[in-house]
Figure 1 (cartoon, rainbow, N blue to C red):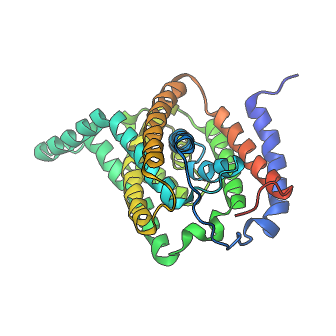
Figure 2: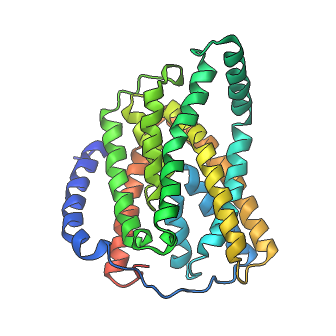
Length: 319
């Protein structure tokens, strides 16, 4: 008799948890290869593919950091480097601003009107304040990491094994949220404490492999929001965080330089990221109106297991 996805998930998660306990102590925090590899030259085709990976994985709950590190290595292109991926992230920033431009205008004017009329219970004011409060945790902890761990991009926390285990861990949490979440609330009922909870979850995305959209969607489901409103709030909440992070990384990219990468591959990556980011946002919002999140739970489990298997068999290095 065929197993349903929830039952399959419970069986798979049990085996994965046992595997994690056996593997984690000896391997996951092992120091990645400290040798610094020069940023490879990226051509236009590679730029388009990397932009597609960035665009699709930035807003689907599967982690853009993980895929931008794993996919080009698997394809034999080498790690494109933090500088290049930071710059093409501008395409994703442009896409989310483009898609939600009317929402942002409405929220901004609604906040101004609420302040002028002292109507602090209005929907736009509560939503805008929720976005502001929910953005504080990731900004605070992001700055704290920059201060305490200046070389975080090259730390063991960004190794492929950490990415694999965080991918698996968040898949289990998303599956649990899908199981226990009541999914009876819309954004009209959003409370400030909901925004803070989802904002704290967003800060977890500072750990590679977690996925900003995945952690916020999971937390929003735990608060009782329905899937589509949860995804919508996840996207709106991510605008300040993605924009600020993109600008900070862009500054670092300018200082570091892009190695042998030319202007055309860079432009191709940005445009590709913008197009696929917009498509991913539109698709996910429609998809979650009529579907659950089990496809992402299963994908994250498979992705994490594949990385661990490739490392254990020597196909990938734990860099």
